[in-house]
Length: 368
DNA sequence: AATTCGGGGGG
DNA sequence: CCCCCAGAATT
Image (cartoon, rainbow, N blue to C red; front, side):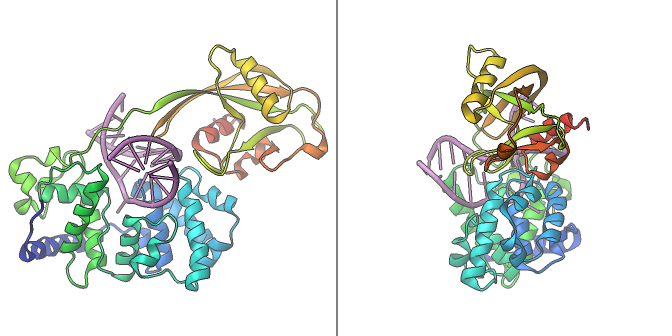
């Protein structure tokens, strides 16, 4: 596959670099040479669009401008800055990795493949991207764009969703890097895929590589890359309690939130207490039973609050939320615990929450 | 090699 | 509605 000689490789690189210098977007992380800040951008960009990342990166770098700043921050604050971006283990891994750079590498992002790859959350793509972009090390950075671009230029009909395909595309991408131009070339390949050689209806009429693209010559550009279809997400029913206490004392009304476990889906995020529904049980009974079992609380379900549907990569939530009220008063000594708290509705925004629960919080605050 | 991890934009 | 997105870790 992709048999290229040095001359063809040089021509592709030359044309892509010329196109890139003319058409590259003015992205905020292209204005810095700081390897840490470039690293942050690459982690945020994993499975995430450039337009989505821009405001997150800007706020994150403003708050955590250096490795020292991020290393010293409370994890929950880091999550708060990541809130809504998804794949929250990226944030946790990034902070773990940054702390290791502090200890092991004296606060300087390592510039070798072995060292940077040992950091948590740094896989083959991110390692190549940071090393090439920040240090101009001639290593490939194969992301979804590069799979698509190379599969079309060289008409590679291999299933790119198979892990085995990655190594072949990596060696091809590495071979194409012109001497001394790893940084710009790798970015040109991705930028080209993001703006010209796009997934559907590629802009072949504006393409600087049209004359040498094998897929275009065969009229196959729309059929590449080959990718296996994903399984549909499985659906589960979730019951959520918007539980308010009725003490009405000096602090006013408070609502119960719970922190999810440190591992698994939405790890470490706060949410209104939620449980997978028990088939055959009435929602009110089910919710009452679950809250008693988990938090030793007696509540009464007052009324239906809202329905939410949310699809994750592999899961579909069908969520029903009910307004509930705590029976009796809350002892002042148990108004907070390690993984649950009673908080004033106005302070819900201080806690990192998933997109679904953010929406519930806004409904509760009357902001919608 | 197959699953688990979020969320949103666009055809 | 489906696909895709500057993927990595776990099993």
